Length: 138
Image (cartoon, rainbow, N blue to C red; front, top):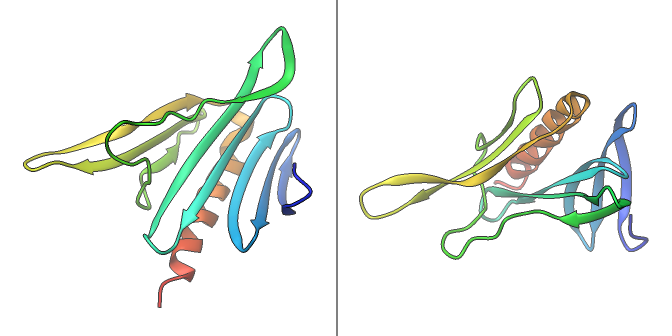
């Protein structure tokens, strides 16, 4: 974790922690097992959306080194409305942003199977990120 970012640990269960970061006035939330994965939730209050990034261990040959696995898209954004980021009881994280075309609506996104111990911290992070969207509204 960077020294330029102010971190506050909000929840810890075993090796998995949920922290709030404040970097130059921007709030975001991170759930991580420090050496295996990190999922970051970025609220965008002005747009009423949030985006999600995921990093995971690069390879078994280089344990503890995280690489960014967040997909990027040629067309359409990756910003989600509240309710479009979920995690199942068994740890399937789903990030599916609704995209609208002229006569249809489709979802664009990704899923990641996380360990069960990540479920509660991820749910808390989603709730905090969605609440941060509401706090910014007049």
